[in-house]
Length: 112
Image 1 (cartoon, rainbow, N blue to C red):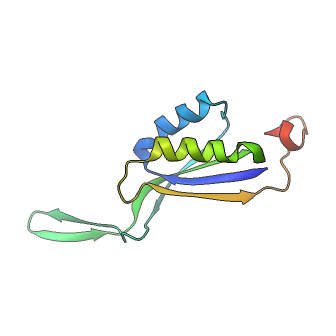
Image 2: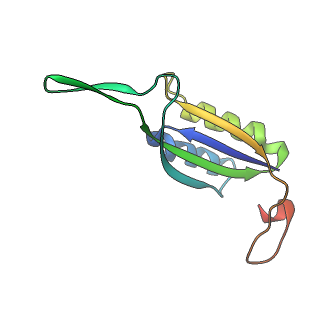
């Protein structure tokens, strides 16, 4: 099993969530986060002055999937979340040792 953590544009969450659900990946967790990458933020103008916003709002999406589904989930997130501009996000893949459903005690793939 693998945990997929994706940092995406907030406005893409609905599309990505719908695409994942359409492919059978229903369970996920989201967080509102702030961050920056290589672009180091953006410069905004207000009246006569400019200022830098270096932590931009992003959405963090997390889901745990079976090893065989990792590439499919990555493909869905990349295709749906891509705008072609800087700041589209990143995806991190993390190994998961065990999953346990609290309500039933099920373990492994059945608990996902």
